[in-house]
Image 1 (cartoon, rainbow, N blue to C red):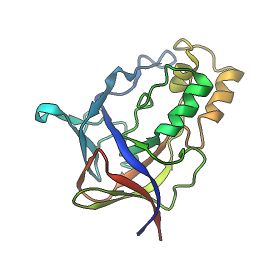
Image 2 (cartoon, rainbow, N blue to C red):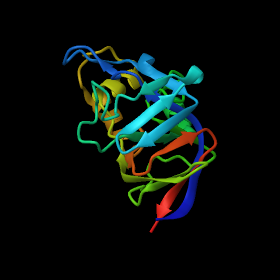
Image 3 (tube, rainbow, N blue to C red):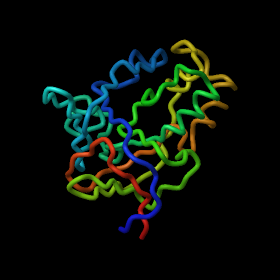
Image 4 (cartoon, rainbow, N blue to C red):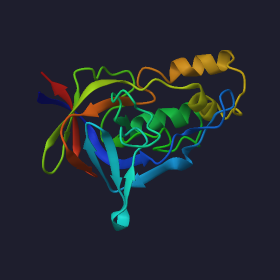
Length: 198
């Protein structure tokens, strides 16, 4: 893979300590309190491990080694969004949608919104020591729980026409993209991220 168009630089990094959807079926709530901002992320085929201040390692809930992993198939270890996608979300739905609240691993800045783009060719993260290909890159499909959070609806509220319409709006990359790192490396703030070019 060769580097193609620059998508942006790494503005912030996060991992999810626990699942963001909490509660019994039918009453699950989206809970962003389990999102942890970190200074760097170690990545490999199993997923992400946040490297926090003081040397603490925080295993992301999508890491295959997490005891409550949300990625048993091993096909969505990392996720990314652009800060410009958050600008659109706030303009459309409100100021409660702060950068990172969707739980993506990597938030980019300095590029165009990712929403509506085709990233299926793959993504390359240029770190200090390696170039990390992300493969199987695809849209992170929105869930009902996050959609209710976006609309400030109560957990368990009906999936009515406004919720269905918002689910459609949040698709096509507006909730970000997911992929799998194929090289072991540490991703840090300021690293550049490119669309791959065959």
